[in-house]
Image: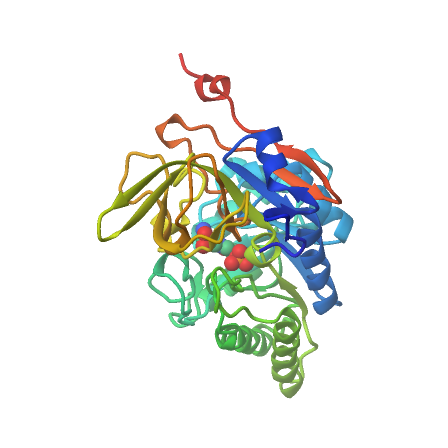
Length: 425
Ligand code: LLP
């Protein structure tokens, strides 16, 4: 639950605001973001990684207000599309603090990044190296580039969010020699300034050993590049992917320990090889915005399937949180609008979509006196819920409100029926 959440006369409050007031003022479903929680995590990262760069991964959740918080807290930003870049630029975020990612950036996206003057472009394929070299020449720019390296680390997480084994679409492999070949090709292009290597091994990873293996392998490649080309690359970007606690008993890495561990490995390998220690960047997404978000729903129907469990249907579902359906993700949910002493009943929290896989929480307990109209809160939905939301079944995407100091304010408006019909001829 968010850092500022508590129970006030039985009802959940976040940021000093009672969830019943939130539901009354903004409707449900509703994404609620605890501003103090999110900003304090930004500061925790800035402190733990002092002297390094922290670039928030915008794909986890991005909107104008989020960009303003990042700027105020001194973080950088990763974008993975022209759309994410446009959000950042729309509120004047400094382009040099932006890194552009993606395994298939279009000519238009690369051009936009060049024109805006983004700080780094992470190249992901030989096609892209050639394409970017050509575009840079056309636009009279010399972008700083990094190579996305596939380090061969087996990340222990869901298959769809593991990204450092060879048999997946991202990066240039260390094992096959593709990464070393990319170095050669970029160094041969005067239009591109190769400044470093990048690795992202996957997401929602709680065992930090994999990050350390990746860091060691990248650093070893830095040493090889110096030996082969006489070039010392000044930067290393170790990506994001650190896990958070979703349900009781989940472990989450300590950010300070992680920072110290990564720095130690990189320093050691570099010192042993007589290389200067490169400037480190990390790209956390989930750990910054995930824990501070909750989703509020209103209970609509309650169906007891005799002898099995009770299906509790709410007014949203896989359109506002697809993670359970997509990754088998686990969540914690609770009755939020009142206290209850009733017996626990085995429940499944489901949405209102036309799919039996439209599940938000698979198995958990709710009080047996639950009734339509009660509010439920699902914890840790700040990351990859709103950003993966859809309009399936023509449901409008819910509003996002920020809460702090007893005040709630809309930072992303909820969609209306007009929004749903816009653009249709
Ligand atoms: N850097 C790069 C290059 C990435 O691809 C990602 C995430 C991150 C940083 C941030 O990772 P984080 O710290 O948030 O784990 N939709 C999935 C997660 C996909 C992550 C994609 N890349 C989910 O809901 O679990």
